[in-house]
Length: 546
Image 1 (cartoon, rainbow, N blue to C red):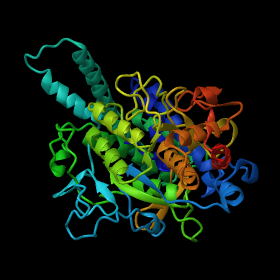
Image 2: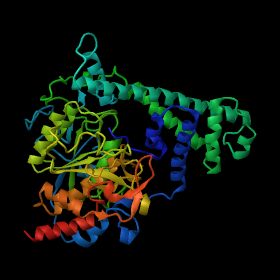
Image 3: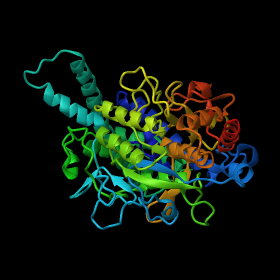
Image 4: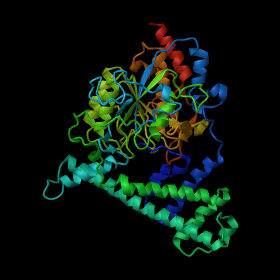
């Protein structure tokens, strides 16, 4: 699961600070960082809605030069339709800007309750939902950390032999789980106190919007009131309304509250809804055809970035102009299951997808071998797998992030897998998204992932941020290449995307809490950002030589 970062939820970025001891000095630091992050965003100019398609030279915006590629390089070329599978949390197939580009399984007759094409999936007209069943669809689920911790706790209770590698891993998982649970409890309580403190100040001053003079006249008697004063002082100096501060706090409290109620809740078992035998990772035929699921915001947004109808006067322009989006739902509001990921990949490949977008990830993968086998299958069928690097501001060279292109043996890589970090619409040192994961070895290239305007359910539009948005930008450019240059293999497309990336000169901010400046080559293998114009030029050269 990768949470897309709306402007009101950027407290997630500083999550690494909050695991420290909960003393007053560090709490005030966390509040300061939270507020400064929000204030910075409130003060900055709004990103152009179509910025990720713009060109650095022509538009002075570091997008991927989509419009320039179409207008200057592709306008007289013919294209072929490319199927892109969006393996995600569900997609609204009748969205006004997506309906014409949604994949249709021609082997199925809609809604006749018959498996016409005999592929094992009943009425899979636009794709398949692997996290649904006869009794409905999975919405909320817990983290893989929680599931693994619960399983191993049951195994090692009582007289079980408490030695060996697995037991050592269990102890580490136990520490990780308990640390996160304790942190969630503390932070839920902390943000509750902040709300109470601000309410006390508003009551004492008779003001809804608290200013500097109001705070000077207010006498804080309790610790939580003092912390609230510190926070409101920062906000008042930056002319941020108290209501906006309260909205940030409410969002933060909701985030940590959800960790307690859902993410870290060991009692949740979503497989009851699905009705499969989860222990059997070879089982394929389960689920339903509810393409959007209970909440299709994320998947709909991803699909729009790739392929929303271009130049139709509605909403926004997707990157690719001759694509069909296959909907494969495997991601709940929580961590996806390895079995579902593996089946989602296989379904996409078997039904003709040439590109698979995967804007999700997690820290543990108990059935990684099943996912590896599916990835190997996709590679063998000449499919490009595009994966988002994650939003923790961490180095994935040293921390786990699954699924990944390294097989369990650690001796072989998935050759047609490309890992994507997120870039900003600002130039220079700010070009890296502060939430993006990175890795000199494990992240291949960056792509636009901040304030990306795209489709959401009910034929609406919104701006989200995340590597979840950077991956579909890349998938769109990849689809462009496979559409106009159909003889290119998946491996060639990957190499073209990497080689043609625009290299970032000078130093940039290291994502995460540490604001050191580093070279872009320290953050990804190419040191660059995806560029459609340069990719098309290189593709044309390669194809012309054949």
